[in-house]
Image 1 (spheres, one colour):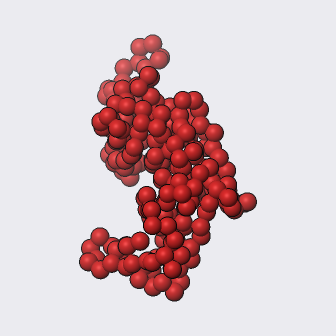
Image 2 (cartoon, helix red, strand yellow; image 1 turned 120 degrees about the vertical axis):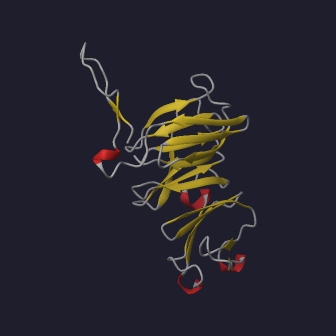
Image 3 (cartoon, helix red, strand yellow; image 1 turned 60 degrees about the horizontal axis):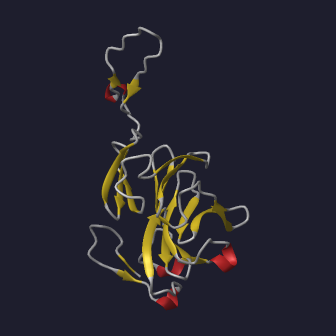
Length: 220
C-alpha cells in the first residue's frame, strides 16, 4: 500500500505486509476521518487508523474484518463508505453490510428485488441518503436506514443495470452513474444547503395559486 500525505505533497509513504495489511490484491481504498478502509479480494476489509499522521507509523492501528470473525457477507470487499452518522457501510461480492458498533461486527442489509447481490459502490449525499450501486440496479437508503427507491433499466433511463461507480456532485446533487454500457446522470436535487437566503431560487416565480395543488420548489 502506497499513500501520499496530501495532493500537494510529492513524497510517498509505503506500508508493507509486515505492517498489518497482508493482502496483495487491493481492490479499493477509501479515506475518511483519519482512517483508510482497504477493500481486498478474498481477505475482507482492513480499517487502517493512521491517526491523521500518515508519516508516523508508531501510532497506527489496523483492524481486520472478515466473514469468519465479523459476519461480513463475503471476504471479497468491493467498496466502503462512512455516512454522516459515522456508520460504516460495506459492499461485498455477496451483499451489503452495515457495521454495528454495539456488537462490534457487521450485519447484512436486506436489499429489495431486483438489487444485488454484488455491491460495486456506495455514495452518501448531503441528506445522508446512501446510494447503492449493484450489478442489478441502483438503490437509495434514507437517513433511517430504509430502502425508499430503486432504479433499473425497466423503470428508469439507466444505461445498464450493472452499475460500476457512483459520483455525487455536492453542489448540484447530481448523481453520476457509471455502468458497463455508458454514463447516466440522476438529478436528485440534493445539493449543499444554501448559507444565505439570497442564494435560494424558488420555482415557479411568481407562484400563482389557482387550485391549491400547486407546488413551489427550491434549488438549494
